[in-house]
Amino acid sequence: MLPTKTTPEMGHRGDRLEDSEIWLASVLTHQLRRISDHCNRGLPIEDFDVALAVG
Image (cartoon, rainbow, N blue to C red; front, side):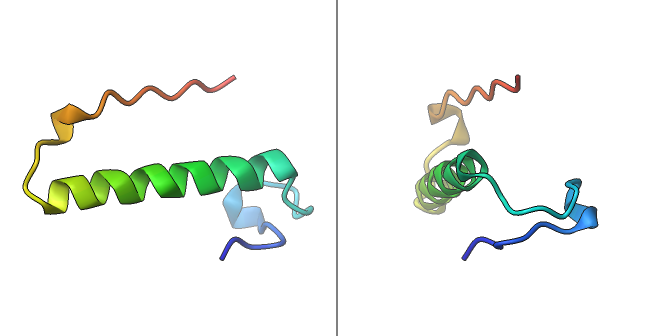
């Protein structure tokens, strides 16, 4: 479950999460689960070509 509010420790002003932030968090969580499941099966992490653009 994603928080409905951020905290100063999270690096935000304490305002509500934007829809785009919630979307990005859900996408990253899904991808991390996929990578974790992949590695737990003994397959190499190198199979994933991960690129994160911050802009």
